[in-house]
Image 1 (tube, rainbow, N blue to C red):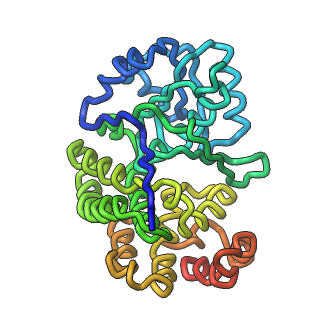
Image 2: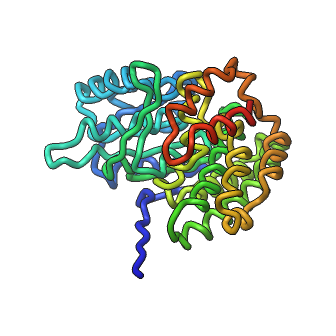
Length: 334
Protein backbone atom coordinates (compact mmCIF):
# COMPACT_ATOMS: atom_id res chain seq x y z
CA UNK A 1 0.00 0.00 0.00
CA UNK A 2 1.28 3.46 -0.91
CA UNK A 3 0.40 6.53 1.16
CA UNK A 4 1.34 10.15 0.55
CA UNK A 5 1.79 13.32 2.60
CA UNK A 6 1.60 16.76 0.99
CA UNK A 7 3.33 19.38 3.08
CA UNK A 8 1.08 22.42 2.75
CA UNK A 9 2.32 25.32 4.84
CA UNK A 10 3.67 28.66 3.60
CA UNK A 11 7.11 28.56 2.05
CA UNK A 12 8.67 31.11 4.42
CA UNK A 13 7.98 31.40 8.17
CA UNK A 14 9.80 33.85 10.43
CA UNK A 15 9.46 33.81 14.19
CA UNK A 16 10.85 35.61 17.20
CA UNK A 17 10.62 39.04 18.77
CA UNK A 18 11.39 41.75 16.24
CA UNK A 19 10.95 39.50 13.23
CA UNK A 20 8.51 41.99 11.68
CA UNK A 21 11.70 43.77 10.58
CA UNK A 22 11.81 41.15 7.81
CA UNK A 23 8.57 42.43 6.29
CA UNK A 24 10.24 44.97 4.01
CA UNK A 25 12.72 42.38 2.74
CA UNK A 26 9.87 39.98 1.98
CA UNK A 27 8.02 42.65 0.00
CA UNK A 28 11.20 43.19 -2.03
CA UNK A 29 11.71 39.45 -2.52
CA UNK A 30 8.18 39.11 -3.86
CA UNK A 31 8.77 42.08 -6.18
CA UNK A 32 5.49 43.66 -5.15
CA UNK A 33 6.19 47.18 -3.84
CA UNK A 34 2.56 48.39 -4.01
CA UNK A 35 1.15 46.77 -0.87
CA UNK A 36 -2.38 46.80 0.51
CA UNK A 37 -3.17 46.12 4.16
CA UNK A 38 -6.04 44.01 5.52
CA UNK A 39 -6.58 44.39 9.25
CA UNK A 40 -9.16 45.07 11.96
CA UNK A 41 -10.30 48.38 13.39
CA UNK A 42 -8.77 47.62 16.79
CA UNK A 43 -5.32 47.20 15.25
CA UNK A 44 -5.31 50.35 13.12
CA UNK A 45 -3.39 52.37 15.75
CA UNK A 46 -0.64 49.70 15.67
CA UNK A 47 -0.24 49.53 11.89
CA UNK A 48 2.66 51.98 12.04
CA UNK A 49 4.75 49.24 13.68
CA UNK A 50 4.71 47.31 10.41
CA UNK A 51 6.74 50.01 8.69
CA UNK A 52 4.46 49.98 5.64
CA UNK A 53 3.00 52.71 3.46
CA UNK A 54 -0.02 50.79 2.10
CA UNK A 55 -1.77 52.00 -1.04
CA UNK A 56 -5.05 50.82 0.48
CA UNK A 57 -6.23 49.70 3.91
CA UNK A 58 -9.22 47.41 4.39
CA UNK A 59 -10.94 46.78 7.73
CA UNK A 60 -12.51 43.37 8.35
CA UNK A 61 -14.88 42.47 11.17
CA UNK A 62 -15.15 39.20 13.08
CA UNK A 63 -16.02 36.11 11.01
CA UNK A 64 -14.98 37.88 7.77
CA UNK A 65 -18.30 39.07 6.29
CA UNK A 66 -18.33 38.49 2.54
CA UNK A 67 -19.82 41.94 1.95
CA UNK A 68 -16.66 43.48 3.46
CA UNK A 69 -14.42 41.13 1.49
CA UNK A 70 -16.04 42.13 -1.81
CA UNK A 71 -15.77 45.83 -0.98
CA UNK A 72 -12.17 45.37 0.15
CA UNK A 73 -11.23 43.57 -3.06
CA UNK A 74 -12.69 46.44 -5.09
CA UNK A 75 -10.76 49.06 -3.10
CA UNK A 76 -7.49 47.14 -3.33
CA UNK A 77 -7.95 46.51 -7.04
CA UNK A 78 -8.64 50.18 -7.73
CA UNK A 79 -5.52 51.13 -5.76
CA UNK A 80 -3.39 48.94 -8.01
CA UNK A 81 -1.89 46.89 -5.17
CA UNK A 82 0.39 44.03 -6.21
CA UNK A 83 0.65 42.35 -2.79
CA UNK A 84 -1.37 42.07 0.41
CA UNK A 85 -0.26 42.14 4.03
CA UNK A 86 -2.74 40.86 6.60
CA UNK A 87 -2.35 41.98 10.21
CA UNK A 88 -4.63 40.42 12.78
CA UNK A 89 -6.39 37.18 13.57
CA UNK A 90 -8.17 34.60 11.48
CA UNK A 91 -10.83 36.94 10.09
CA UNK A 92 -8.35 39.43 8.65
CA UNK A 93 -6.09 36.65 7.36
CA UNK A 94 -8.92 34.69 5.73
CA UNK A 95 -10.27 37.86 4.14
CA UNK A 96 -6.82 38.68 2.74
CA UNK A 97 -6.53 35.17 1.31
CA UNK A 98 -9.85 35.46 -0.49
CA UNK A 99 -9.05 38.94 -1.78
CA UNK A 100 -5.66 37.74 -3.07
CA UNK A 101 -7.41 35.14 -5.22
CA UNK A 102 -10.23 37.45 -6.35
CA UNK A 103 -7.53 39.83 -7.63
CA UNK A 104 -5.48 37.12 -9.34
CA UNK A 105 -3.04 38.31 -11.99
CA UNK A 106 -3.46 37.65 -15.71
CA UNK A 107 -1.45 34.43 -15.34
CA UNK A 108 -3.94 33.16 -12.76
CA UNK A 109 -1.60 33.50 -9.78
CA UNK A 110 -3.00 35.12 -6.66
CA UNK A 111 -1.48 38.33 -5.36
CA UNK A 112 1.36 37.52 -2.94
CA UNK A 113 0.10 37.54 0.64
CA UNK A 114 2.25 38.09 3.74
CA UNK A 115 0.47 37.25 6.99
CA UNK A 116 1.38 38.86 10.31
CA UNK A 117 -0.85 37.05 12.84
CA UNK A 118 -1.80 38.46 16.23
CA UNK A 119 -3.66 35.38 17.53
CA UNK A 120 -3.00 31.64 17.70
CA UNK A 121 -5.78 30.54 15.32
CA UNK A 122 -3.18 29.72 12.58
CA UNK A 123 -5.46 30.65 9.69
CA UNK A 124 -2.23 31.75 8.01
CA UNK A 125 -1.09 28.14 7.59
CA UNK A 126 -3.91 26.79 5.41
CA UNK A 127 -4.98 26.96 1.78
CA UNK A 128 -8.55 27.44 2.86
CA UNK A 129 -10.55 30.41 4.10
CA UNK A 130 -13.77 30.92 6.00
CA UNK A 131 -16.22 33.77 5.68
CA UNK A 132 -19.76 34.70 6.71
CA UNK A 133 -22.37 34.86 3.99
CA UNK A 134 -25.22 37.33 3.71
CA UNK A 135 -27.51 35.03 5.72
CA UNK A 136 -25.06 35.11 8.63
CA UNK A 137 -23.95 31.50 8.14
CA UNK A 138 -20.35 30.33 8.04
CA UNK A 139 -19.06 29.17 4.67
CA UNK A 140 -15.65 28.39 3.26
CA UNK A 141 -13.55 27.86 0.19
CA UNK A 142 -10.43 25.90 -0.71
CA UNK A 143 -7.90 26.78 -3.38
CA UNK A 144 -4.14 26.14 -3.43
CA UNK A 145 -3.68 29.80 -4.32
CA UNK A 146 -5.08 30.82 -0.92
CA UNK A 147 -1.81 29.79 0.74
CA UNK A 148 0.10 32.76 2.12
CA UNK A 149 3.56 33.31 0.68
CA UNK A 150 5.11 34.30 4.00
CA UNK A 151 4.18 34.26 7.69
CA UNK A 152 5.81 36.46 10.32
CA UNK A 153 5.33 35.43 13.95
CA UNK A 154 6.46 38.44 15.97
CA UNK A 155 5.29 38.03 19.56
CA UNK A 156 5.90 41.71 20.31
CA UNK A 157 3.01 42.55 17.98
CA UNK A 158 0.66 40.28 19.94
CA UNK A 159 0.93 42.15 23.23
CA UNK A 160 -2.07 44.31 22.30
CA UNK A 161 -4.19 41.18 21.74
CA UNK A 162 -6.67 40.78 24.64
CA UNK A 163 -5.54 37.95 26.89
CA UNK A 164 -8.78 35.99 26.59
CA UNK A 165 -8.57 36.13 22.80
CA UNK A 166 -4.93 35.01 22.89
CA UNK A 167 -5.60 32.09 25.22
CA UNK A 168 -8.85 30.99 23.56
CA UNK A 169 -7.15 30.84 20.15
CA UNK A 170 -4.48 28.77 21.90
CA UNK A 171 -7.24 26.27 22.66
CA UNK A 172 -8.17 26.51 19.00
CA UNK A 173 -4.61 25.44 18.19
CA UNK A 174 -5.00 22.56 20.65
CA UNK A 175 -8.19 21.66 18.79
CA UNK A 176 -6.22 21.61 15.50
CA UNK A 177 -3.63 19.25 16.97
CA UNK A 178 -6.18 16.89 18.50
CA UNK A 179 -8.39 16.69 15.42
CA UNK A 180 -5.43 16.30 13.09
CA UNK A 181 -4.13 13.43 15.21
CA UNK A 182 -7.57 11.77 15.21
CA UNK A 183 -8.15 12.26 11.47
CA UNK A 184 -8.80 9.21 9.34
CA UNK A 185 -5.89 7.66 7.45
CA UNK A 186 -2.16 7.49 8.12
CA UNK A 187 -0.23 10.69 8.80
CA UNK A 188 2.89 9.92 10.86
CA UNK A 189 4.58 13.27 10.25
CA UNK A 190 1.55 15.14 11.52
CA UNK A 191 1.22 12.76 14.47
CA UNK A 192 4.66 13.69 15.77
CA UNK A 193 4.05 17.41 15.27
CA UNK A 194 0.56 17.27 16.80
CA UNK A 195 1.73 15.50 19.95
CA UNK A 196 4.56 18.01 20.35
CA UNK A 197 2.13 20.89 19.81
CA UNK A 198 -0.16 19.51 22.52
CA UNK A 199 2.75 19.15 24.95
CA UNK A 200 3.91 22.70 24.26
CA UNK A 201 0.42 24.20 24.54
CA UNK A 202 -0.29 22.49 27.86
CA UNK A 203 3.04 23.81 29.12
CA UNK A 204 3.06 27.34 27.72
CA UNK A 205 -0.55 28.57 27.77
CA UNK A 206 -0.79 28.67 31.60
CA UNK A 207 2.52 30.53 31.67
CA UNK A 208 1.15 33.05 29.19
CA UNK A 209 -1.83 33.62 31.48
CA UNK A 210 0.49 34.10 34.45
CA UNK A 211 2.81 36.48 32.57
CA UNK A 212 0.87 38.01 29.65
CA UNK A 213 3.65 40.51 28.84
CA UNK A 214 6.35 37.82 28.52
CA UNK A 215 7.32 37.93 24.85
CA UNK A 216 9.41 34.76 25.08
CA UNK A 217 6.42 32.77 26.38
CA UNK A 218 4.21 34.16 23.63
CA UNK A 219 6.79 33.06 21.10
CA UNK A 220 6.55 29.56 22.59
CA UNK A 221 2.77 29.77 22.17
CA UNK A 222 3.21 30.72 18.50
CA UNK A 223 5.60 27.87 17.77
CA UNK A 224 3.23 25.39 19.42
CA UNK A 225 0.33 26.70 17.35
CA UNK A 226 2.42 26.40 14.18
CA UNK A 227 3.21 22.76 15.02
CA UNK A 228 -0.50 22.05 15.55
CA UNK A 229 -1.44 22.59 11.93
CA UNK A 230 0.63 20.42 9.61
CA UNK A 231 -2.52 18.61 8.43
CA UNK A 232 -4.73 21.65 7.80
CA UNK A 233 -7.53 20.12 5.75
CA UNK A 234 -8.22 17.25 8.11
CA UNK A 235 -7.91 19.42 11.21
CA UNK A 236 -10.27 22.09 9.91
CA UNK A 237 -12.80 19.41 8.91
CA UNK A 238 -12.73 17.74 12.34
CA UNK A 239 -15.88 17.30 14.39
CA UNK A 240 -15.15 19.98 17.00
CA UNK A 241 -14.32 22.51 14.28
CA UNK A 242 -17.41 21.65 12.25
CA UNK A 243 -19.74 21.86 15.23
CA UNK A 244 -18.13 25.10 16.36
CA UNK A 245 -18.51 26.76 12.97
CA UNK A 246 -22.16 25.78 12.93
CA UNK A 247 -22.94 27.87 15.99
CA UNK A 248 -20.08 30.37 15.88
CA UNK A 249 -20.99 32.79 13.11
CA UNK A 250 -24.73 32.41 13.70
CA UNK A 251 -24.46 33.36 17.38
CA UNK A 252 -21.35 35.59 17.16
CA UNK A 253 -19.09 33.28 19.15
CA UNK A 254 -15.38 33.64 18.30
CA UNK A 255 -13.64 30.61 16.78
CA UNK A 256 -11.34 30.11 19.75
CA UNK A 257 -14.23 30.15 22.17
CA UNK A 258 -16.17 27.50 20.24
CA UNK A 259 -13.17 25.20 20.72
CA UNK A 260 -13.23 25.95 24.45
CA UNK A 261 -16.92 25.04 24.57
CA UNK A 262 -16.82 21.86 22.50
CA UNK A 263 -13.39 20.20 22.38
CA UNK A 264 -13.56 18.21 25.65
CA UNK A 265 -17.02 16.88 24.84
CA UNK A 266 -16.07 15.94 21.28
CA UNK A 267 -13.00 14.15 22.66
CA UNK A 268 -15.19 12.09 25.01
CA UNK A 269 -17.39 11.13 22.08
CA UNK A 270 -14.50 10.23 19.77
CA UNK A 271 -12.76 8.24 22.52
CA UNK A 272 -15.51 5.65 22.13
CA UNK A 273 -14.94 5.42 18.38
CA UNK A 274 -11.12 5.65 18.31
CA UNK A 275 -9.92 4.38 21.69
CA UNK A 276 -6.44 3.43 20.50
CA UNK A 277 -5.77 6.85 19.00
CA UNK A 278 -7.23 8.86 21.87
CA UNK A 279 -5.09 6.88 24.32
CA UNK A 280 -2.11 8.89 23.00
CA UNK A 281 -3.77 12.19 23.91
CA UNK A 282 -4.46 14.00 27.18
CA UNK A 283 -7.84 13.01 28.54
CA UNK A 284 -10.92 15.05 27.86
CA UNK A 285 -10.97 15.85 31.58
CA UNK A 286 -7.41 17.22 31.36
CA UNK A 287 -8.40 19.44 28.44
CA UNK A 288 -11.49 20.64 30.32
CA UNK A 289 -9.32 21.42 33.35
CA UNK A 290 -6.81 23.33 31.21
CA UNK A 291 -9.60 25.50 29.80
CA UNK A 292 -10.88 26.14 33.33
CA UNK A 293 -7.36 27.03 34.53
CA UNK A 294 -7.15 29.61 31.75
CA UNK A 295 -10.49 31.09 32.91
CA UNK A 296 -12.02 30.63 29.47
CA UNK A 297 -15.73 30.05 28.65
CA UNK A 298 -16.97 26.47 29.03
CA UNK A 299 -20.76 26.64 28.68
CA UNK A 300 -22.78 27.36 25.54
CA UNK A 301 -25.67 28.72 27.62
CA UNK A 302 -23.54 31.74 28.52
CA UNK A 303 -24.05 32.91 24.93
CA UNK A 304 -27.85 32.87 25.11
CA UNK A 305 -28.23 29.63 23.16
CA UNK A 306 -30.74 27.01 24.28
CA UNK A 307 -31.73 23.51 23.23
CA UNK A 308 -33.92 24.44 20.21
CA UNK A 309 -31.01 26.28 18.53
CA UNK A 310 -28.67 23.39 19.27
CA UNK A 311 -31.18 20.88 17.91
CA UNK A 312 -31.36 22.89 14.68
CA UNK A 313 -27.55 22.98 14.42
CA UNK A 314 -27.31 19.22 15.02
CA UNK A 315 -30.00 18.46 12.46
CA UNK A 316 -28.25 20.58 9.83
CA UNK A 317 -24.92 18.82 10.48
CA UNK A 318 -26.20 15.26 10.69
CA UNK A 319 -24.55 12.94 8.17
CA UNK A 320 -21.23 11.32 8.92
CA UNK A 321 -22.25 11.46 12.56
CA UNK A 322 -25.91 11.01 13.55
CA UNK A 323 -27.74 14.21 14.43
CA UNK A 324 -28.77 12.65 17.73
CA UNK A 325 -25.14 12.12 18.70
CA UNK A 326 -24.26 15.68 17.76
CA UNK A 327 -27.13 17.02 19.85
CA UNK A 328 -25.85 15.06 22.85
CA UNK A 329 -22.43 16.70 22.43
CA UNK A 330 -23.99 20.16 22.18
CA UNK A 331 -26.15 19.54 25.23
CA UNK A 332 -23.16 18.26 27.22
CA UNK A 333 -21.53 21.62 26.54
CA UNK A 334 -24.67 23.61 27.33
